Structures are given as structure tokens and as C-alpha cells.
Amino acid sequence: MNAQNDVTVDQAAADFAAEVAYWREVRGLAKKALAERMGFHPSYVSHVESGRHKPTVDFAHRADETLTAGKAIWHKWCDYESARARQTRSAAAVVPPRRSEQPYATGSAVVVEHDAARLDYDGTSYRLTMRRLLRNTGTEPITRYLIRISVDRYPGDPERSNAHYRAHPLTWDELALTAACRGEEMRWEAKHDRDAFKEVWLLFDNAQGRFPLYPGESVWIEYAYTVSDTKWGNWFQRAVRLPTEHLEVTLAFPEALDAVVWGTETSMTAEASPLRSAPGIRHENGMRIFTWSTADPAPHARYRLEWRFRSRKPEHGMNQGEFT
Image 1 (cartoon, rainbow, N blue to C red):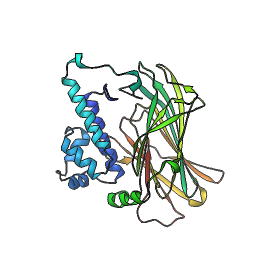
Image 2 (spheres, helix red, strand yellow):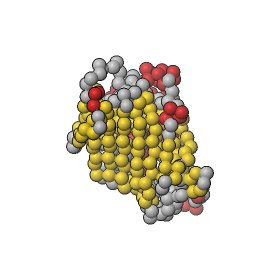
Image 3 (spheres, one colour):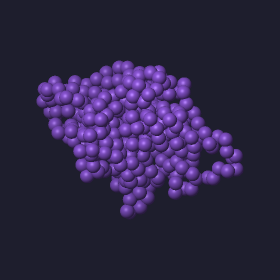
Image 4 (cartoon, helix red, strand yellow):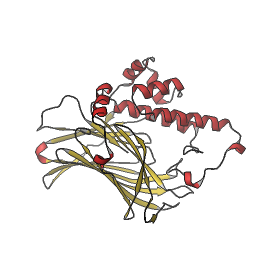
């Protein structure tokens, strides 16, 4: 049985809609523009993302290809179809999952009590450091946690971005991914490895032993990686895929760049709108540091912080990157 066996049909449909919206925003397309590229009625994508239209195999195929999502949208449709099939199956036919296949989260098994992300820029590279306080609210030990890294050098121009990453793919060596929990190094395994998109399982074990997150326990994990500004750049988006109690983002730029920062919020039911509170700012050791936080962010909401360096001339095209 796969990792989505406890997901209901409604949850799977919502996850599919969120995945479409995520990739559409990564590619910098409006709903109407995406619908036209896919050959659908201009309002169709809006209906899918709002839940008024249920996922279809044709829409999933076309959306994945048009948005070059690396089968991410297609896999969400497969999860939806699996949920529909389970709904009509006899309960006696359901086989309990083996412990070795227990996912990092099914339903409400894990809650993110605090999500603190920091981006540091040195003028050529970004260093991303994420700290998360996880609580196991399920009945089985959690042995792995999924993270995502996705970048897009030219949002709104998928063909140009695809060509850029074919020539300059995001590599594991340059990412230099590290992860730790309880002072122990965490092993990791690649789930998806695309030129501009990575999904990674962080494992609660290493060569010296195992340290699973047991039911009722909470623990901090921390992971970090580096991306050149030729592949990552002037916006930083957080997508809320798990129940989260507090979300915090910090951006640190050299003072000489004279950075300005703003942000938007997008939900399942509303287009992008300004953040409800402005990022704070402070000056420290030659760095201009911006911070923003929110309590109880909505499921599937996306929070994007963008910036501009006033001391630099604007480039043709914009960089963008996202992590989860």
C-alpha cells in the first residue's frame, strides 16, 4: 500500500488542485493563460484550483506537460484515482501498510509546530537554512520527512527556463545538502531528481543508529543547502503542505546591495494579495535583515517574499526559487 492510503477523495482532490496552482505560479502563468496553453476554456483552470471541477486524466496529462512539472501533477492525479478506488472497495480488501513503508505523514500524523526558514545571500550564492519543530500526532513512528527544492530562472518563459536548466542543471554537489536531528546527522535519499526540481527524503537514521520520531514526541530538525544566484534569485516562496502552527522567514542581504522586500499571499480560494503584515527590517554586521512571520497559516497557502537590489541594474528575466 502506498504512502497516500489514508488520504480521502476530497483531500486528494485538494492536493491535486494545490499542485497545479504551485506549478502554475512557479512558471509565472495566470490561470487564464495556462488554460489557453492547454486548450481548455479560459475559466477551466480556475474551476479546478477552486475545487469546482474534479481532476481528470486529460487535464492532469496536459497540465504536467505544459508546466513541465516532472510528473509531480500526474502523481497527484494518481493519488486521487487511488483514493476514489479505495472508496468503492470492500474494507476487507484493504491491506494494512507494512511498517517499513510508513510515510512521513498521512492525514494529520505530523504537525509542524514551528517552521523557521532563513536565506543568506553573499552576492553570488544563496544559503538556505530551515529549522522545523515536528510533532508526531499519529500512532506510528515517523522515520522520514520529505523536502522539496524547485527553481526557475525565467518565470513566465518555460521554454527558456527549460533550455537554461538543460544546459545548467541543479546538481547535488552544488546543493551540498546537510541535515541534522537531535545533534545527529540525518541520511537522505533522492525521491525525484530533475534539472530544476528535487524531492528528498530526510531519514531519521545514520550509520551509527536510528532515532525515529515516536507518537506524542516533538523534535527539531535542521537542513541546509546552497544554490548559485544563476539558478535561484529574487523571490522565495513557502508552500504550506502540512498543518503548521507558526511560519517564520528571514532574508539577509549585504547592505551594499540596498535591498527592498515585499510579499504576497495566495490561497486555494483567492489570487495573490499583499501580505497582511509588512516584513520587519534591521541592520546587523553589514547585513540588511528582513523578517516576516504568521501564525496558523492556511493549508495549501503560499507565501512569497520578493526583492530587488537597487544598487544593481535589472536583469533580463527574473530568478526565482522555492523550498518546502
